[in-house]
Length: 569
Ligand code: SF4
Image 1 (tube, protein in one colour):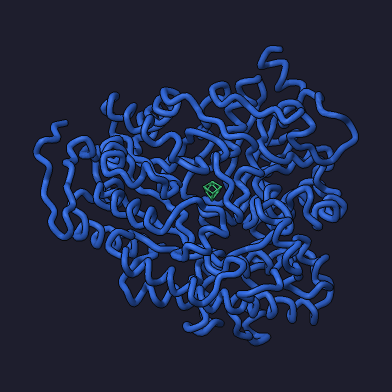
Image 2 (cartoon, protein in one colour):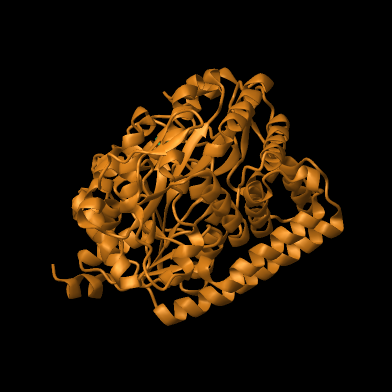
């Protein structure tokens, strides 16, 4: 079927990412869909509302207001966990009915994260920001729909974007009932997993959504447009197409042509989908199905094309895990003599402990490793099924830092069964490794009744409880759960606060603003001779940064560094 025929039959497809999602990269999901469906002759437009200043300003205002209501001692990693408060507040604002119960619910939402009450006037101030947010979103969306006149309105939905996405779907159906509404996105991997207690209720509570696409979207979306899916269903997932996943060599490069890429600090690409591992708390394999790699020349061609088109060097790879592709990708970048720098998610596997491997990666442009290290306790690591030892963590961080690659480390606090002693082991490990850590960020453990690898095991061993009052379920639509086990949620959040204070005291950064990133970069430059160039060099420089192939091997002999002159490159 020709391109013209396909778009004339279906009309325009508008794919949107709603606030709030941190716009570090142009959205890969809807950009891959644009590329794939466009390649099959469909007319697709993508929009990321997160880059519109008015909405980021309102988020900042909400966080400033919340910050003034929460004493400093109770904040923990405020800019991270505050997102839960914002999301639940938005949901309650959209769906609550009683004024008094609503105010009480907002107070509970704040308390269950910061464990400190706020007063009624503070709720009013927070609510005023939320009210203005939805008013602005309505104005924006109505104008967008008038301009684009889509026949299909699709939204890729994640935890943080759920309230605004539901608002958008409802608005579309109210004003343009003829437009087909389609929901996809990562939320169906965890919070709204098909087997979750909330899933069927969600389908009933959202009559304004015509179709849900669950899991990898390309094939399901294409078959939906071609009317090849079984009729009379609202939700379609991989079993509806016999588990068929897309061949990554056939889906084309992500298409960012509708997006203002200058807004994002990184461009984006990917080398694989899913993950060959099965960590107990993770839902990546649930979302993407079997692990697949993209041909390396395709990845490199994609990033070089983007570099030439947008004159930007920094990429964030969207892979769940870079380990399986990092070496082959580095070698290809070295062979081609490119000036592409890239960062992404990594496990502390044995190969990462090899200084020759990390040196290869550094020379191939690997800029920052985002490492899910999770815990310093061997007992907790084993319970998670991480298949990584504490010794490996030490060695991997040392090897990466020695090559100069920034190490952003993620730690899970309050994993079921984590004791105070386990937690202290995590802090002790961070202290011991602090010079090899560029950045330390912690996340409180989150439990979902389905979607995580260990969900059903936890449910059998412990009682799952609603975090918020059961009567708030209809207002919040998606439940937040806790497990009735040690550590409690309150204790977990106490440990989060302890973690943040501890890292601050030890001078281990967790930068959010550009000024904080500059400071963290200066620290990294002082600590490591091979440190990657500071971020500011990529932002400010007229000419391309081009240094990675000149990096020399440093032999680390306990506090005694010397260059290995024998290594010629
Ligand atoms: S946590 Fe990382 S390594 Fe583990 S399953 Fe998820 S993506 Fe894979």
